[in-house]
Length: 427
Ligand code: EPU
Image (cartoon, rainbow, N blue to C red; front, side, top):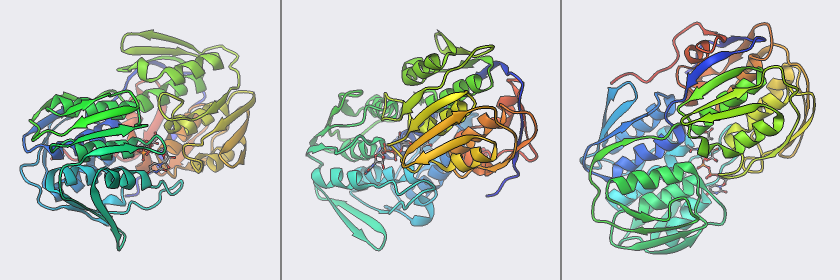
């Protein structure tokens, strides 16, 4: 869906406070994990985003009934799995939906999931998902653009991931949770969104040990119960707003933040020269009247500096005089923000996955977001300069930032959109 552009007029400091929503990337696998129980589950802190709507559409096809029972509270119920396939039309909208494979397989014994395909910044393979399932005893065949998975018994055995993958770890956990086997995953992701999935499943009666370490042991259980659960705050949204404070040389408070999830980001902001004050679930960033310094950054899997904040950090560094070097080996093609920042006067040279940024003042321009985090980089850049920055591609921003214009207005930002932002209907 094409939405009218976002108009951003910056060049003045922001102030006040902004509250972070529940985590998109934690909520999506937790929503998928409700496929594992025939009982009702109520989730709180679910952000109203188009990606959430996409996964709910896919789950409706699989047999899940959902009801929004509060602004960010969602009741999910899957009494029976009605279909075991996840068709291309639904999977291609969002790569994260590939993890339904593990969940459908756990509950129904077989699953046919379309290959997710590429995205705006590279191929993003799923080889580790498939290798893990095969190593644990699942038959997986590729056929006509689909992965067809079939299990004859409980999943058992060990798999060592060849690299740290959040989605691959999710998929293997989901597949192994039900049954009477014992599965060990080595070199598993320790990402907050993996810990969150494990805590949620254990809350419903799963037996998964080792959350937050690279070795997970999953003992299959016969069934999961229903329950109620609150999703963790979105560390990427929090980080985006913290970087915005530094880029606009402002002081404001970001509420509902797990600062323990943001160590790498806080460290870099301090290295740049911003003041970061933590107070329970709040963090205040102060970058007023400071001589901010350029820094070098390389993205890594959690707890390293997140790739999901790389474009936003690049936008901030594009405003800081001097040379910064940003490398994103996690997603080497995640560079769609660069050409747009050039339009705004940024000096960024790209070589492979390395950006060499010569910082200085940016200027407003018409720009286009080609993906979610590039869109975030552009509203950060737009808020640093006077004049009207017109950001097209708002549908991408709506994948990850709820009621963005309204919430930024709460910080005194001049951000407007002519039509209401896309919010999933309260159905
Ligand atoms: N990889 C493989 N093979 C696989 C799986 C991953 O080579 O089978 C590689 C990827 O190409 C990448 C690295 O492993 O280089 C890490 O990928 P990972 O599997 O961890 O990513 P993901 O689970 O597909 C999630 C987030 C992304 C975020 C990445 C990395 C969700 C819905 N998505 O993706 O979030 O960039 O982890 O942290 O949780 C976003 O929110 O903007 C976003 C894209």
